[in-house]
Length: 197
Image 1 (cartoon, rainbow, N blue to C red):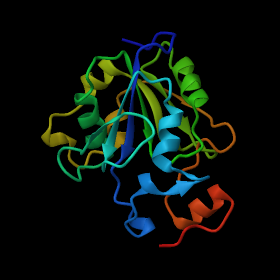
Image 2: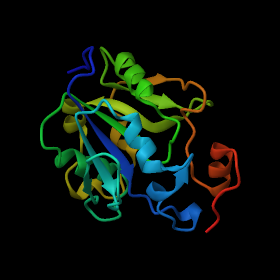
Image 3: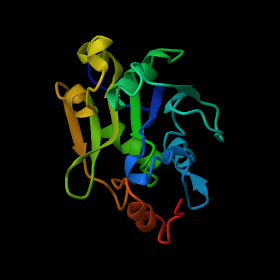
């Protein structure tokens, strides 16, 4: 199966379960930039989604979402994605997936990804250097076809999970492809001194 044109009926998964080791263990979802949390920025980027599941700690949000913790616990982003996919209330043709630490993603980003993925298994955003980022859309049926069993999810990387799929790479516009892994990244993204813990 391949993605068909149109945005109707897609779900979104926000990956927010990382341990933030390079941020001193700070919960990335709760970090603020431009006066709003990274999680709220992520939810804005998938405003078109019919249903949203956040894989990570439960925190207050401006939009109703479902929170879930990855299984197995601390199993990594692929385990978070697959656990979130399994708690969706309905089946959707496509999933939009994004990391919580990419505050410059927009709804337009995911519209472009959907359009680029037509005729393929999906599409994935790159950074300015062409490296794949944790922002992509994928045909739900194709994802289900390549997923490992429960035990195989532990420690599985997103790269390995997606390797069998035909994903079109989409170049970023402006800072869409930037993520926040360190306090320096946060400072650069915000254009001001970071809120040192």
